[in-house]
Image 1 (cartoon, helix red, strand yellow):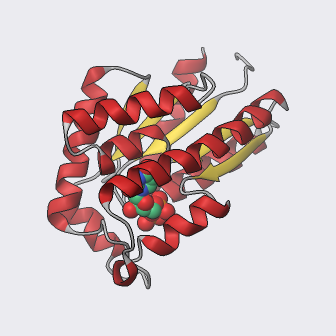
Image 2: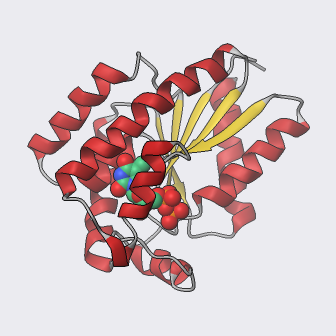
Image 3: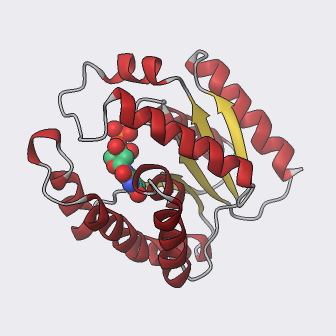
Length: 203
Ligand code: TYD
């Protein structure tokens, strides 16, 4: 098997089950003695913390355009960290990356273009090797997250429906190596699709 270190991104609407699948993939890679680190956006750095506080439903502080810049700025710092991890020969498993900004903040073609330009300036050419898009219907996603204590300002039906559509459009563009995974099955079945896809990719 090809042992190159991979930058693997997980995307999908809130409640799609990304975090569970990332934990499972990390454990699986560790069981093969393949060093890996898990990370996420918004990050735990200063800008990420500012974002998390500002998108709580009861506490929305910034306009959508400011949010676009904040998520992108958080990613500038994050990309440097990711590069260091890859240089240190760790796989990087990342919960959300540029496609989240396109799906959540890229409401118009002009905004999508701006996001791509800003990010291409700042990412030092870091590109995910593979992007798993865990697809679930908005109904299922909302059912899964309804018991969460903290909700953010994006977790409503109409907005998540448009986010899901933007993800699907982006996948069609084939800009990156996207893999569409059905996230409506059981955790184990979903993980088995991810594992199979990854093994094929590395063959
Ligand atoms: P996340 O912690 O992944 O939320 P959850 O654990 O509920 O899935 O992300 C927080 C929110 O930030 C999520 O609603 C998606 C949103 N987000 C954007 O709007 N743009 C972005 O660029 C990123 C990275 C996240």
